[in-house]
Structure formats: structure tokens, C-alpha cells
Length: 631
Image 1 (cartoon, rainbow, N blue to C red):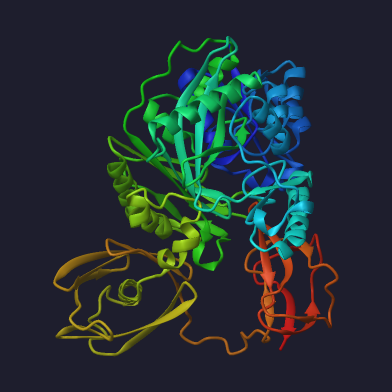
Image 2 (image 1 turned 180 degrees about the horizontal axis):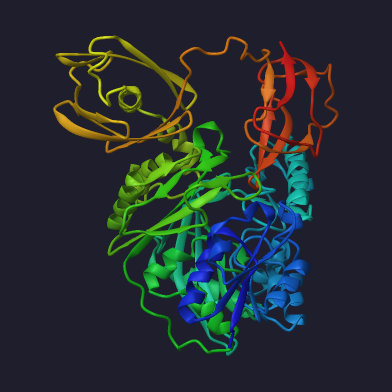
């Protein structure tokens, strides 16, 4: 029996595992980097051990330090969570060699699936359907499009879609460089890129006594940069025959490698309904809550019981209903999915949905880790009800802090292609991103008007507007990089706002404004933190940045300057690039890594690279001058 468990992870998954441990009466041990010293998972554990440093390579990826931490805290078992060392066979073996219980599959099973190329060879021998690999050196136009992938790791890193044969050598080289930097292994391979394919996976759970449960399918097709955004269970629209094929293939994959514990077998399903093995994740998945909701199980509890040697019942529970999960990221979808940093002032969602989060109010979102703030999960008897429930909860959520993908998630869930399950494929965002990120100008204007009225109320000496009955007021806010000027006047006849004739002011306070819009009473909740103003309402929510009334005339940037859009590390500079070189508009100059993602910085115009201020390995803050291109 496990009495004390160390979770070799952080954030949301550590809190998730701790929650189950408390229910089972198991003591908990956290590990933490210096950046996470005040993180919720540290406070919630019964004991915590510091891993000196901030970067994952110095902390959460140091298996030797984690094993020492387990012994120091008196833990007798280790759960790896997901990411970091969760699929590291060497770490699994080190935990076992140290006399600790490893809550995961045998090291040999992890090793068998660690390389996607070797995993495909094993699966082919077991009769699992898969795509035939393509040798990049011998590829022809007939093989296009191709997907170049890293053999190790995951999360979309080291992955490139190639549509032109001339681009293949460069993309292979770029994928190798990214894979080597991310996983310490530069091996890549190529396979056909299935246009219009769906990402469907199967949850398996196996014990040490030969039992293998198949806990249904999940669809994870809504992805950005090859990383999942929305997941659901069961995967909709599959024929009974295809579902049976997927279940059988997943069970065969688990048995082939002597699997034990929770794992996921991932497939690409073509538009014609053909399934192809992608990989097996030898760990708990981020999206495991949707399976838990549909099957009524606690997968972490089952992992612990399997690790203790218990046998699974002969048959898994019967599934019921449908569940959908959305990942709330600190990122700006309209700006190339750039991750965002800053203080998360408030995060709350309505009752009736599940919230799994690694942060709480006041948390500082930094650059060291993944930008996911939380997962929101909704269950209902039918898919349509679950989708509606999740969209409504996200819409009514209060998210005050860095820019997030919340609006994108709401619109994605309500988009006809997703709502009817006719557009479930990995190209969803390629087709629809512009439409999904377009901010209605009317909503932005109303939110800016409410912000201005709340601000005026707060600045009024008497707590109202009586001292300035008719003086015209002007306030300027920025939203999504676009400035919006609000001009209004208050007199005995009420509110007179430019661009909003007929809008009536019903009441105002520093944190709440009520307006009558088109004969309908609307309430706007207004929260302010520094120069950021957060406005939430039933017609939409906006994050505004209040512009100073008298801007500093010296705040100018030299034309052609490339500024760091986020804090991060320069991981590489374009080969041979030097000051004085001619560059073409859109040409990649350097790459920044932040929050486990690589971001390409390109030339804003054709001209001369008149300055290059950084080199590989340099850490930069947001706004740092990286380079200057003179037209």
C-alpha cells in the first residue's frame, strides 16, 4: 500500500493528483522550482522539496534530484503526471531501483514507445494499422504533402507540414534543430500528411494480471500548432466498425508491449474513415477528465491501485453521456498564438462545470512553463447539451489578467462546423481562425463606454456625475492593438455618447455600469488593475488598456525595429545572418522560445539588417530590441 506519494510535476496535474490522494488518505509531497515557490500545488501538499533554479532542465527534468527529494520527504511512491519525465524510461527505472513504487508503466514499455519510429515498427508487427514512412531523401512530388515529425517527445515540437518539395530539406533541418533543443534527440521522420484528418485517441488501462480495459475514444482534432485545444469523449461520428477497429488496435498495442497503468493510443482518422496509428502516450493525458466524466471513474485512483498490484474488475464501467474539455491558455490567437505573461488577477467559472487549474488569483504567469491556465470540462447526457453547457460557462467566466483564448474557445464551440461535428479535423483553425478572432466593434465600443463611465464615477469627488453635468469627456483605450476613443457627455437629459445614439445610462459605480442598449437592460462589470480594464457582460467581454491622457512624446521606436513580443530565450538565429545583410520581407531572422513554444521573428520589410542585438542563448524581456531592418 502506498502511504506517501511524491508527484514529480507541477501546476494543474500535481493538484489533480493530490486531490485523489486526499480522498484515499495518501500523504502528498510536492517538488518545486524557485519560480513555483508560492504556487498552489506547493501549498496544498503535505510536504514540499525545493529544486533550485527556474528552468525545467535544472528542476523538473532532474530525475536524480527528484529521487533524492522522495527519500528526504519519506515518500514511498512517485507519480510523474504528464510532460517532463513522465515518459522517460530512465527515470522510471531509477525510481524503481531506489526502492520506490513507480505509478506508471514498466520502463521497458515506456522505452518501446519512446521513439515514434521504433513504435511504428512494433505496431506494424502487431498488425496495428499505420501510415507508411517516407524517406525524405527519396521523396517526390507524388508523396506531398508530407509531415515531418520528431521521433522523440511531443506537443507539436519538431513538427513541420511540407507542401513543396523544394522546402523539404530546410524543414527537415529546422525540425531536427527544434527536436534536439526540446528533447535532446534530433531524430526526425516523414510520413504522408493526411489532409482533413481527425485526431482520435483511445484510453486504455491495464493491470499486472493481464487485464486491459478500453475506456472509449476521444476526439482531439481542434489543435493549434499541432497542440490540442478542445477535446471530447466519445469521439462523435464514428461508425460502429471504425470504433471497434480503434478499440481492438489500442488493446493490441497495450498487450504487445506488456503495458500496465493508464495510457493512450493515438490515431489519425482520414476523411474516408481509415485509422492510422500515430503514437502511444505512456502516461496520463491532459484530456483524461472527459473520459472520467463519461465512464464515472477516477483514473488517478485506478493508476494508484494498479501500482499497488490490485487487479481490475473483469469489465470496465458502462459509458454514459458526453463530455467536452477546453484548455484555457494565456495566449493571443489573433497574434500568431503568442503566449502572454503577467499577473492573473482573477479566474472564476460558474458552478456546474469542472475546473482543473494550476493557478489561482494573483498568480504571476511567467515564461518558464506551458501557457495553459486551466481546463474547463462539461458533461451532459448528449453532445449538443455538453457543448452548449461548456460554451455558456466559458462565456460567463471571469478571466482578468493576460490575454487568453477564452473568446476563441466560446466561438469555436458555437461554430457550425464544430457544433454539428461536420468540421472535426485538424484543419479547423486553418480555415476559421480569422472569423473566430474577429472582435465585433460594437461590443468593444460598449465595453469601452462602460469603462469610461465607471472610471469617471470613481474619479468624481461626490461618487457621481453631478459635479460635471455637461462637460464633454474623452477617454482612449486600446483593445487587441487597436485604439478606441470614447466621447460622451452627461447632462440633465442623460447620456449622449458618440457612435451610440439611444444608449441610456441607468446606473454607474466604479465596478458596475448599467446601460439600456436597443431597449434591453445590460449590466457591465468593470474591474481595473493598473492600466488594464476588464469589462464583462452578456454581450461580450473585453480587456482594455487605458491610454494616458497626455502621451509621452519621447516614447518612439526607430522604424524597422523588431521588439521581443514576449519574454523568452533566443534559441537560434538564421544561418549566416549578420549586420549589413539584405533581407526580404517575411524572411525568418531568429527564433524565440517561450512557454514551451518556438516563435519565428521575421523581417517586417525588405531592406538592410542594420542592427542585430542578440545571439542564440540570450534571454530577453518583452520589448527588448532584437534587430533593426532599414528599408
